[in-house]
Image (cartoon, rainbow, N blue to C red; front, side, top):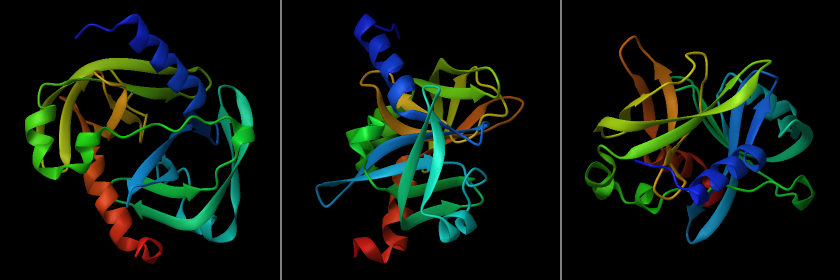
Amino acid sequence: KGVSKQCSKKIIEQMEKSICIINEKNIGFFCNIRYNNKNIPCLITSYEAIDELYITNNTSIEVKINEEIKKIEFEKINYFDKLYNIHIIVIKENKDNKIKFLDLDENVYEKDLVDKVYEKESIYTFYYVPNKNTYVTYGIINYLNKSDLIISCNIDSNSKCSPIFNLLNNKIIGIYNRKSKYYNKGIFLNFLIDEFINENKYFK
């Protein structure tokens, strides 16, 4: 589908205020996860970018946001999945960092609607090429099956854990997972959110 001027401005703002680079090679993004009508500020990135050992031994990490180094402090509340190479970390909000937290698409929280709402939907995602730049690429959801989605888009094969957005509303629906010879694959965030909530006693 076509991209409006307003949508394009939103995409630029997301690239400048919501996307970060970790260790000069890994991409991450900031978003709110809703639970009991409250927003939980989180940093989502790959497990290889920040593993559980780092979380155990540290209370903060330096990331690059729009070419500026920022210190991100985090809580000891996290969820990781080595298989999917994903790490969700609850962070402490700091207005000085001027981070704009991304929103999840409302339908992500409605499991029964996923298959009906997103099939053949237009999407976009970001990816980072080390020592070059952050890029945006557009595509479509070809197929979805429970937690997995198959997407057509031109994305660098080395990029991991990039957010996948619904082009209609600029909100996140999933995370880019891996690339094969014939397709790109992602995972719906509703699956990860359920695991994240269920694993942490904090929310109970």
